[in-house]
Image (cartoon, rainbow, N blue to C red):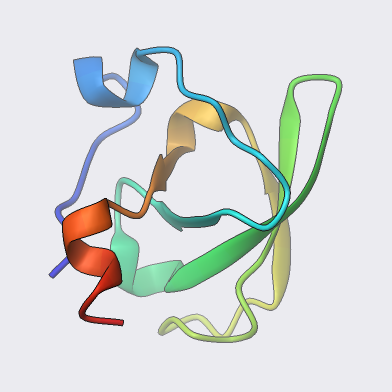
Length: 79
């Protein structure tokens, strides 16, 4: 349901506003991390709480913003 978006793709590189509490996913391989909640942003890095929703069972990780894709409004209704 969530399309893969490589970090070098235009969609990943475009400026996007990420805020605490927002739902995001790891663009290159959505199934690896699952869906996560932005916890905080500091010095250009984004801390995300995935709560073990993906195949890797990761609970928290820190990413550069171009690796994260906000959950589209059209998909939010399916969650």
